[in-house]
Structure formats: structure tokens, C-alpha cells
Image (cartoon, rainbow, N blue to C red; front, side):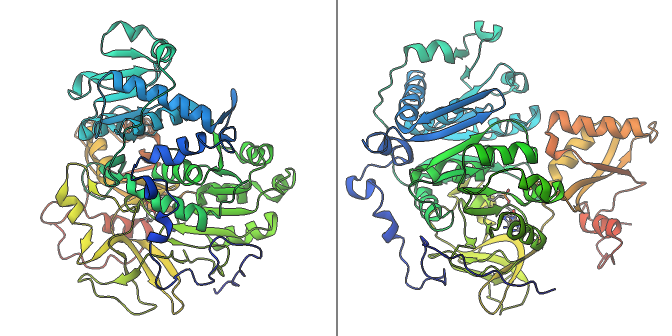
Length: 572
Ligand code: WT7
């Protein structure tokens, strides 16, 4: 079905060209907006926070507008600068410096953000962990990154296997706890009383490390995607061009800072642009999110299809109870944006929903819809200035329009990951010739719009969260009842995909609802809730190749009742 195209939005646009693929664009144009362009002194924490705190016209502006069921708070740029200086002083006192890894495993509170910038201010590399991670997920990440310091809470410390992490020297605990007797622990409350609000920021090189986000692939443990300070160039530019941020906007990005959207666009893009940033703690419900939009008079909102689909299901009546008239710009990321959702946005909010495509590895948006562009529902849009995207074959040859293939980006954009932590060969495997290969299949139409088709590997996207089947399979077979496991993404109208596991049982175990629920809980409590299979099916055997690889594609074909294709490599 060819849906009606949605006409460009009227009004002033930060990216004025109708065609975003501007010829002859040079990132140099953007660099001039940064203070380091003139002083030579680089640190993203300075550009995002301290620069505004030093500006008499900006220092008292609210940077962070925090709202949770039990807590409301406004933090100005000056306050955030001072609070992050305090954290930086604590970290420095305990010997943290350039390129050390400091992880954050704590709820999304104002302290999270002050600590995050404190880490960057001493030149260290921040590793934000999603609060819902359970022991194994936490251990894998802290061990792989050889984190030296962890900032966490008494509630969450029980999921950190401290004894199994030899590199971990100190743990800062926020909130009182009896664990404090151990000299490995540092009390945040005690230290903050003494810590100075002044700090000499550590200047770094633009190529120095800033951030590690772990993300899943189809094989092996999560990969540490390593980003450098240089990424700020693209965070800032896309904040202007795509989020369309203007001086007096109030902006809300719903993503958690444990995922890349929650840092690139929940932290860097808004604050590099000096914008008031809404942070919401607590759980999701359509009512509470509408309330947040209304109460804070949000003007620009960046969210995800999985949330938008829930708004659609919640019905038009709910929307009409709220005054959302301040909202002027709405964007989406993480999964395909269904054309029906775009129709809903036009009908209920009178707003276009702007899809954006990028990945943890790309660090920032690459293919987007901006206000000055026509939207073609179902398409992810076009590359931003400075980005060359193409559909290529396995040899790195460009394919003509309308032909499906690998979505690839010409190497060398500012926010591209600089490494996979401790794994150079994994990093190399992303590239064919000069192309970064995304692993997404897509095609480009005659007018340069890109259309997402699916993943080329077995990576699962459930409610916008990327889950590697291997990790879930490995966890499943740790359960005493499970012999073998194969895990796939099964299409789901609300979640995009759900995780479905096929297992075989060890001798002596009988299939029962209780057993399946126990297995599910086992994954949930040791890995994380979003990685737990919603469906588990018991099989007599799991299809494998002769070399022992699980044939997930075959499992998926069976599940969907599709032809099974080439099974010549199937084991007897
Ligand atoms: C994968 C990356 C950094 C954004 C949050 C997810 C899928 C992302 C879209 C989109 C269709 C999308 C892709 C991509 N994806 N945006 N607009 N339309 N699919 O980051 O966890 O690294 O996942 O999410 O499959 O490869 P991520």
C-alpha cells in the first residue's frame, strides 16, 4: 500500500535545505561552534555543561528538569557544573584519571547525571549500565571493560559479584548501607560533604575515550562499543538539524542512559545545544507520559515506536484529556516506525512523527527525517549532510535503487565508534572496504529515501531493545533442566518482536507450565527482564548445522510456517 506522503512542516527550520543530502558539506562548518575550536582545550563535559555555567545569560537556566513519582527537582547549568565537579574531586581523590573505566549502575536520578559528567571531567571513560540488569549481565560488562570504579546504590550492589571482579578497586555507594565497613566501599554522602565545588577539568584529545555502551550481536557476549569525545560534533549537529532544538525549547528524550539513545540524545545533544532537558524516572504508562508532556510543556519529544504503539492502543480519548499544545516536534528511533503510528500522530496531535535511524555503533543519527523534508511513511528518511549511505552487496559494491541489500555507511563520520573494547577483530568485522556494514537489510528508492526491511543476522529487537540470541541460549542451558536451546525473535504487534526459545529437556525432566515458568524466571533474574523469553517451546531436538551452529533461521521458518529454504547444511 502506498500511503500518502506527509508534506514538509511549515515554519523556520534549522536545516533549511529541502534535500538534506547537501553537496559539499564539511564538518568544519560545525566545529567552529565549539570552544575548543578556538582554545584547543577539549572535554565534552565542558562543552555541554561548564561552558553554559560560565555564561551569565545561561548559568541559571534549568538544565535538568527531573520528575519522578516521589521526587521533583530543577537543576541549573551552574548547579550541574558544581555537582559534577564534586564527583570529579571524589574520583580524583581515589586515583581515577584519564582512560580509566568508571561504571554507573544506579537509577535515573539527578545524581546520575552529575556523576556521569564527573567521570568525564577527570578524563575517565563512563560506562552506564541499565538499572534492570541482573548479576550475569553486570558481571560480563564490568569484567570485560576492567572497570576500576563503580558508582551504585545499596539496593543494586547485591547484583554485583564484587569478589569476581579483580580490576574493581572501589565502589561508591549512594545511600547508607551496612556494607560500608569494608574499605573497598566509599560513602557518597560522606565524600560529598567534603568535596569542593571547584575542579580543574582534565583536557583530553578529541580521540580520547568518553563512553562505553555494551550491545548485543548474534554470537558471543555483548560487545563494548567505545566512543570518543569527538562524537560531540555530531551530537550537537543532529541536535540542531534533526531534533530541531532552539534556544527556549523544553526537550524530552524518553530513553534510559543505559542505552545509547539515553546518552547521545538524553544527555549530549540537548546540553551541547544549551537546552532544558526533561528527565523522567519511574515506570511507563500512557497517562503518566502524557502528564509529563503537559506538566513540563515539552516542545520537542524523542521517543520510540514501542511507546508510540502503546499510545495508539490506549486510544484517542486519553490524548484529548491533556493539553499537549506546546509540543511542536516529535521523533522516533529504535525500530521500524509503523505507518499507522504516523497516521495516529497526524490525527491526534496534528504532528508529523520523524523517524531516525542509527545504532549504538554509529554513535549518532545517520538517516533521518527533518522538518523541511517530505515524510514517506514506512521509510527511515535520508542521510544527514556529511553522511554517505548506500545499499551494498557482500563485496562492497553499490546496488542500484530498489534493490535489497546491506545498509552501509561510508567510513569516517564524527561519532563513529572507535573500537570494540578488547576485541579488534570484532571491530574489523564491521567493515567491507570503505564501508561500515550495519547488518540491517534495506533498499533505497529513486529519490534517496531508505526503507528498512529487517536484520541480516539473528539479532532480536524487542520493544526497541537489542538482544543477542546467543546470550539467552547460553543462559537457558545453564538451567539444570535444559539441554539445548535456540532463540529467535517472533513478530509481535506491540513489541515488534518477542523472544521465543526452543529448548530440549535433560533426561528426568517432564514438560509442565511450572517448569517453563521457572526457566523463564531463571533468565529474568540472572540476565535481565527484557532478555527473558516470553514463549518457550519444548522440542525433541534443536536443528543445527554440521559444524554445530544452531539454525535459528530454520526455527523461525517453522514458527512462521514459511518455506524452510536451503537446509543442506543441516545435521542428520
Ligand atoms: C538497530 C540498532 C541507536 C538507536 C537505538 C537502537 C534498529 C534503529 C531504526 C529505525 C528500523 C531501526 C536497526 C539497528 N533500528 N533505528 N528507525 N527503523 N530499525 O540502537 O540497540 O544499537 O540497535 O536497531 O536494526 O541496526 P541499537
